[in-house]
Structure formats: structure tokens, C-alpha cells
Length: 59
Image 1 (tube, helix red, strand yellow):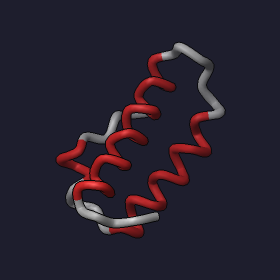
Image 2 (spheres, helix red, strand yellow):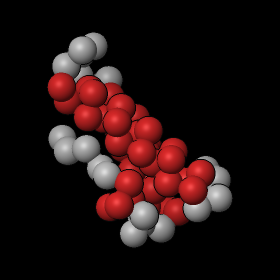
Image 3 (cartoon, one colour):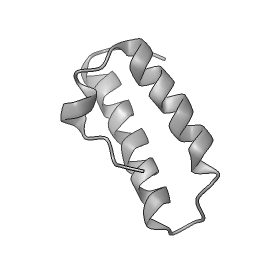
């Protein structure tokens, strides 16, 4: 699992962002608390929210 950066996410459409958000939320349950993979997923989810806010999009 990789962390998605704000720069990478800025190139995605609203639909792509929402789909990625859903996929990451689903994957979140696969990783235990405190693991590096879970931290990467949480960071990516936070970055998605940041991009959606910056671009004034909504889910």
C-alpha cells in the first residue's frame, strides 16, 4: 500500500477520488492498529479529504 500525495490526488477526478476513498476505507480493516500500512491508508484518506476541500468538491 502506498500513501497518495496531495499532488497525485489533485490530478484525479471527483469520481476517482470517491472511488479511491471507498477502496481505502475497505482496505483499512485489513491492517491492525499501529501498523505502517494502516498509517499509510489513514494518511491517504486525510489527503483525499484535503484535496476535496481545496477543490470545493463533495462526496
